[in-house]
Every structure is written in structure tokens, then in C-alpha cells.
Image (cartoon, rainbow, N blue to C red):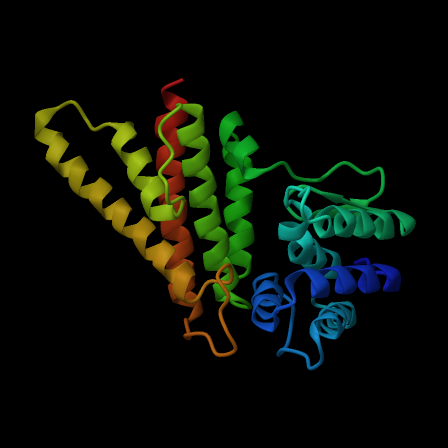
Length: 266
């Protein structure tokens, strides 16, 4: 049985986000990328937030708390500012409202019953630990979205590649690219991976790695144009499930290759 978002939390979140973002397009993108169902509700920013979250409660196919966590994640993980106290005050208001309803917010958009430990660690934790099983689970979760929401599946797959690259770069103390999108991140990782020392196979492997780079670029471009992370608009370009599934499986191939190369070198 899924837990619905309590009314007092609905009110607090809607008020805080509506006042902070104060932009219909930003809120539309935020809710759509978080998996909120249906078309954009009418009303001002606060009313829109409230109606969309209430719609999550009313839809039995939606995990309302999961959507809520993703909706508030960016705001809750902002650094409070001395010159703009709206952030800190808003975060405290949301946490207090959750606490009154025996709920708690955790990093990465996870909401649990108060006192419960988060069920999942971050992707960075999985990569640092060489936890292949958990990464497989993340890709399985992405695949599970392919039929219902291929845009979200592509966003999830691209996020896994980005997390892998960032963790790899930080762990090996490489220079982080100024533009931290998946393409530039992958270039740093690929250059550090190295190639087969046998000159007979070096060129062959270079071609395969070139193919992997194309996969990363393609998945990143997909996310930019149709994925949920950058706002898909009211009428996003159409993509069929088989195409999204290809993108997710291709991403999986890239990630597992890097992990095997990385973990095997330890």
C-alpha cells in the first residue's frame, strides 16, 4: 500500500515551491520530469503545485511520495544563502511539515517514514563499492519505465552514466571538465581507461571505444531533446519503447565495461 502525501505537506510544498520558482514553465518541467501524471493543471504557481500533487494522490498507479521527493529534491538540496533566506526557511518549513506527519526527507529525493533508514544509497556509493548488483537494479528500474514513460527511462540511463563518470573522475583525481554534461565527462573517463597494449588489437579496440563514445553522445542528446530532466514540454518528440530500450541497454553496456575495467584494476 502506497502512502499518500498528507494535506499539510501538500500545502507547505505548494506554497514554498510556488513562491521560490514563481515560473510556470519551470514548474511544468519540474513536475513532468518527476513523473507527475496528466496535463498541466490550471491556476497560479502555488495552485498548480497543489493540484498536481493531489493528482498523484488520486492516481493508484503513481507512488505519490516518490514523485514528491523528486519534485522537492532540487530545492531541498540547495545551499542556504545568507542573502536569500527564502531557501533555508522554505527547507525548514517542508521538513517540519513532513516531520509532523511522521515523514522525513533524505538526499537524492528520498522520503521515508521518520526514523527509517533510506532504502538506497547514492549511485556514487554503488560505484565506489564496485556494487554491480545495485547498478543492475538501477538499470532494471530504468527498463521498467520504458513502456509507460520512455522519456524517464532515458533520463535515468543518462543519469547513471553521468554518476559513473563523475565518481570515476573524482576517485582518480582527474580534472573535472568545465561543462559537466555526459559528453565532456565521458571524454575524460575514456582517455584515462587506456587501450589494449597489443598493437594488433589497439586499433580494433579504439573503434569499439569510439562506438561507446557515440552511444554516450546519443543518449545525452536524447535526454536533451526528449528526456525528462530538461523539460519535455507539452508535446515532446515521440519515441517508441523499443528505441528507449535500446538507449538504456546501450548505456548499460558502457557502464558495465567501465566498472569491469575500473574494479579489475584495483
